[in-house]
Image (cartoon, rainbow, N blue to C red; front, side, top):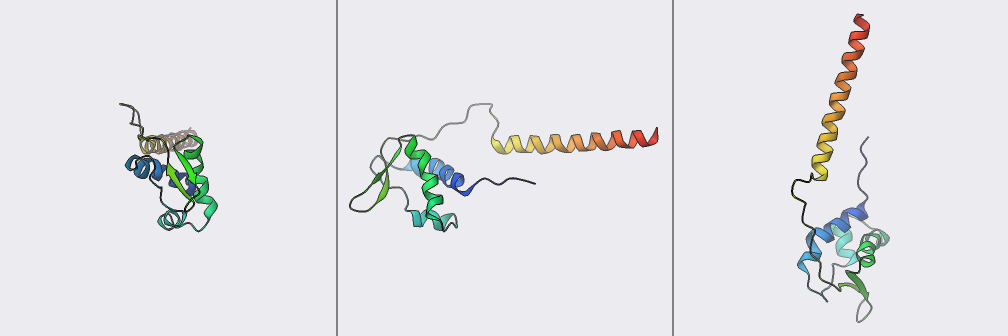
Length: 116
């Protein structure tokens, strides 16, 4: 069974990777409705949960007037990958390969036990 990433984390990742690096200080983030439509989410709280880490880190604040919107309040630069570091997808592929090798080894051990 594979565990899927919660939608609010996907939204946070999208904001970090695609949106924040493009914004200047004072510019608005996408609305709850726009993010909800993009990620097929009807729940307002899911989008708020996605924004919260960015608020906690001091990149985003809520502006109340004239409309309630989130704005970028300090420059954001997307983190650069560490040279030689594996991506999450590469680690998943390695894990699947290891699981397959272990399963094959266990099957071989079982076959050898039956033959003995």
